[in-house]
Image (cartoon, rainbow over all chains, first blue to last red; front, side, top):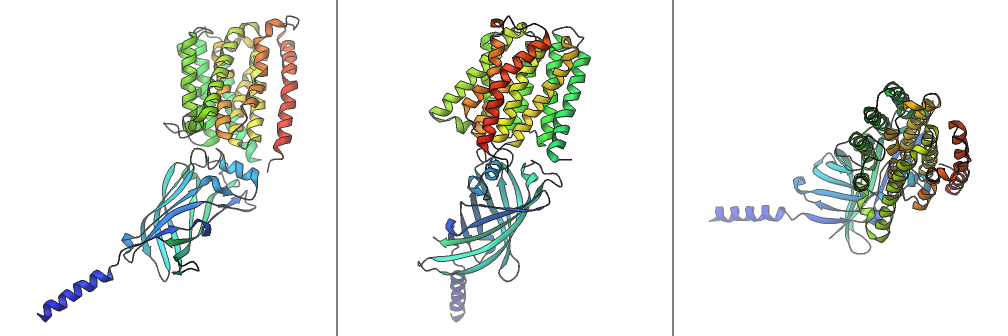
Length: 189
Length: 279
C-alpha cells in the first residue's frame, strides 16, 4: 500500500512539475527592431521598424515553446524621409505588396546560461527562409503595473538577396549582409 | 566606375546595341515577317536588360517589375498575331490592354479598391488604348525619326519622374526602354526603312502607359503627371494640323521635339525642384 501511495505521489508530482506553457504578448512599446547594412563600404546605415506584434509561448519543455513576431514593413525609418521612401519602394522592401515581415520559430534550443538558439522561418519580401536567431533572455517578473513581464535581446544575420531584395547588392554597393538586432519585452496574457 | 553607370551599360546599353544590330540585320525582310521578328527582338532586348538590372524573373512574376517584362513579351506576341498596323480589331486591342493591365497591376490589386483606385485604373486603360490607337492611326503621317523620337522624349521624362518618386530601379527600367528606342533612333538616321513600324508602335505607346500605371499604383505618382507626359502623343495625333512643318525627317523631328520638350522639360525640372535633392 505504501508502495502504491509513493507511486501515486510520484505521478502527481510529475504532473504538477509539468506546468502549462505561459503565453506572452509582445509589448510593441518596448520592442526595438534595428538593422544595419553597409553603405558603399563607407559606413553602416542603421534603421529600425517601429511597429511589431507577436506572441511568445514559454514552456520549460523547449519543444512546446514558440515565438512569432510580425513587423510592419511600412514602419521602417532611417531618419531620412527620402531614404525611407526609397527603402519602402519596389527597389527594396516593396511594402505595398509585402506589408509584413514575419519571424516564426520552429524550434528553440537552450545554449548556456540565459542564451537560446531559435531556429525560425523569416518571411520577408514574399520569400520564406530559415534563420538562426540567438536570444539572450532577460529578467522575468512583475512590472510597475502589475503585469508579469519577460524580455530579451535577439540577433541574427540575413542576406537580403536571399529574399529577392537585389537592388545594388554587388560588392562595393549596398551591403548584402544585414544584421538585425531585436530588443523585446512580452507581457503575460 | 559608378555602379549606376555600370548598371546602365550592362542592362541598357548592351541590349540596345544588340537589338539595334538585330533590327538592322532583319530590316531587309518583307512584312509581316519583319514586324514579327523585330517585335520579338525588341521584347527580348527589354526582358534581358531588365533581368540584368534586377536579377530576377520568376514564373509567375513575383512583383510589378517582373510583370512588366512579361507585358513586353505579351506585346511582342500580339504583333506576331497582328503584324500589320491597324490590323487588330479595336475590341481585341481593348481587351488586350485590359489583360496587360491586369497582368502588370495584379500584385497591386489591393490598391485598385475604392472609388479613386478604380477611377484611376479606368483612366489609365483609356489612356493606354487611346495612345495606342492614336499612334496606329497616325504613324503613316510621320517620319520614322519622329515616330521614335517623340516617345523617346516621353520615356526620358518618365524615367526622371520615377527617380524623383523614390524608385531608382523603375527609373532604370525605363532607361532600358530609352536605350532600345535610342538605338533604333540612331539606326533610323541612316536607315529609316529598316525599322518596322508595326513592331515598334506598341512599345512606343501602350507599353509606356503600362509603366506609367505601374508607377502610379506602386509609387503613388500623381496620375496627372503621367497625363502631362503624354503631350508628345498629342503632337503625333495632330501632325496633320501642322502642314507647314517640313516633311524632312530631321527637321520634322527637331521642330516637334522642341514643341514637346518645352513644357516637358520645365515640368520635369519643376518636379525635381519639388522633390528636392536625392539623398
